[in-house]
Image (cartoon, rainbow, N blue to C red):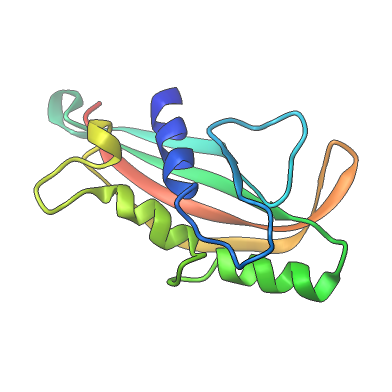
Length: 145
């Protein structure tokens, strides 16, 4: 799972943020401290044995997105762009670009397929004593067990 989480973070770095904003910091682990805007893979669940003989597992990966709060309106605009379904700043679009071409494996061969299925928890989050505006993206990943 560590390699899969790192590959999802690598894909997230493909977003293009509006001019003048810092680059997205993306990690495949929960960092001690964040540099905003930040994307990291957090919690995940695994459904084992979705096919016989360890043929398929399904992972639901929860990814956290945090932005600064220096300007509430600007932070919400940035978060909206990152959590949108399409566009250059869309994390969904950037992550799903790692699905590969038809017939290819996702995440450089680490999975059969992946799909960003939903946004949840658009709200304030505390991380190491600092409050950020953020949201969570749910990524479903399937692959051999």
